[in-house]
Length: 587
Ligand code: G6P
Image (cartoon, rainbow, N blue to C red; front, side):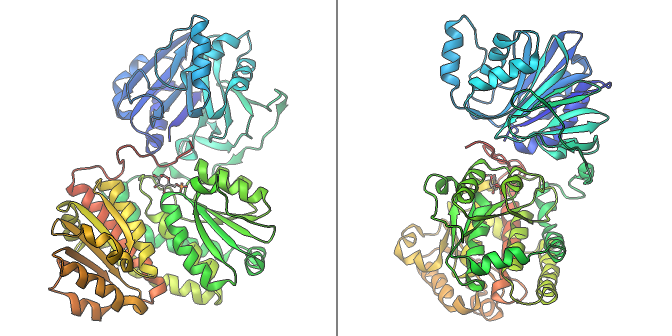
């Protein structure tokens, strides 16, 4: 959700910023821009479209200091004028977040004679900086932030200072030291460049020159924040020999399961298990795919612990929070660990007394800093906007948390399943055929019962995210209570039948659809279902037979591949779905 990058060093800034923006592009890709500073002069290039569009401008952007931005539009269309940086007077600004009171500030500034050149909420920041500047850029930033409501990460250049200034409140920013001094929305943009990184506290300010990073607290007292060694080398993050990140990341599902198992075996989970065993309730919160994994979590934890377990959509839970006590456990699920609604709902639960566990793929993210315990999802960098391997990693986490057996037994079960997941991810026999049926259909319903209904919900989200085909994930038993009215020859129903105890019931749903002329594809781990339905439905994908409670690893992987191929058949780039962004740091 918008990516910001800043550089001050001794090398040309523009190529540094451009490479950083390319790594941040998954956060937003509707427009991009760079400002550099050279001997008191600002050089700016902004374009609608992807970061690549800026390549032609790089030679015109002079200087060894600069800021860059890749945008996911919230206020104002994706035009060059609305792209960041926003330049006013002596300042150029990039912003990630939302300024909630921007229209009041804008009216005030317009009355004072300011002319605006964009429709964004962010432009007011550049104007306020210029108003409050009195020789000290950090003080101007402090005074500016005092006028803002909302959330922000800001980096700004001032023509009278050979460096840049940074601050954050509610949106992420990381400082990096290496071949120059950097600030960026996430660590991927720093990989290969920074050797050490530091996460400023909320409300901190940083004054960054080519040779020094000075950090101040919110009262402008100079403070020392720790810089840690940047161990992870994300610089090799690429698509390998896959045409898209989405396919590469689906193929990393198995590796994610194994890495998550390994990470769990080195964790001391005794405090967490005691909390879970004594809990009066367990509440799971998340958004999008993370919420869908929480639905599976309800089933898995509900079977393992003796208290009610419920899943909540974070954007609802923060305004209508589930009741918790000092004995409750809240598990906040978030791939990025930066989703604003999830963080807010988690914070509310913790303030109400709940023990907060963060289940996240990003170890240094905002959610980890408010949690009592962090459960790692070891998916590695997930670049495709649609979550795939992180979902599988979250499922693995819920299994590991709910397993009552000894670590070796449960690790062995997941290890065995991961081999089958690996085979499915490499198989392109069935997915393209089912994907073709999807793109030929007016709508696609995903249906299942028990474990399979959670898979259906996530599979539907995946398909709509990347192929833009209307779809819904639905309990198969509810079909006859409404959805059946929509079924005809132009609608495809993908029925997932892997939960052995409910297989015959799900098969009934297939019969109901067939007898109304609907199209059906079946994904099953059960040979008798395969035998009964082969030849009677449009497609049947027989997956290896595994216990029902582990089948979602297989069926989800299969349906992620279906979504991927559907995006390709529909002519869309699966890695960058229209209108979406990976890390939703605004509310
Ligand atoms: C966005 C992404 C989804 C993701 C959701 C939650 O909407 O497009 O793919 O599932 O955010 O993200 P999180 O990082 O909290 O898991």
